[in-house]
Image 1: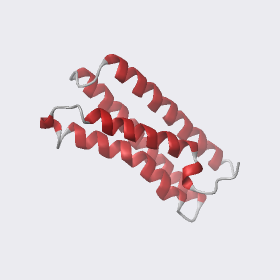
Image 2: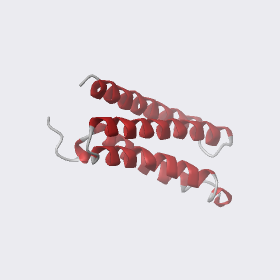
Image 3: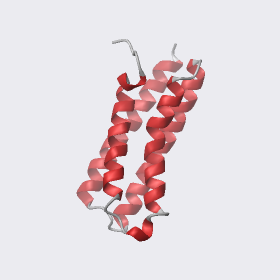
Amino acid sequence: MKIQKFEDLRIWQESHRLTIEIYKLTGKFPKTESFGIISQLQRCSSSVPANIVEGYYRDTTKELIKFLFNARGSAGEVTYFLILTKELKYISELEYLKLRTDYEKLLASISSLINKLRQK
């Protein structure tokens, strides 16, 4: 399948879905975290699909790869905040495990795309 728009990219679809999950999840956090963990977690989760889109609209494969690395870094940052929020008991073990697994799959998918693009 030829990619006609960024929404066709599976990694964008998945990262966007996960961002929505993070926003819904952080809506349940203590209000005292509004400018702390909530803000950080929302920013790094939304940075993943945003970097994918920005890379998609760049002129070169090299630039796309650079933004995919940025997206991967942001997805990694999300995994840290998931650990932190679990240990602070803002999320359950089940919520943590599901999101952690989803983000690890996303990280692997981003890495796979980077490797494919590097081979071109």
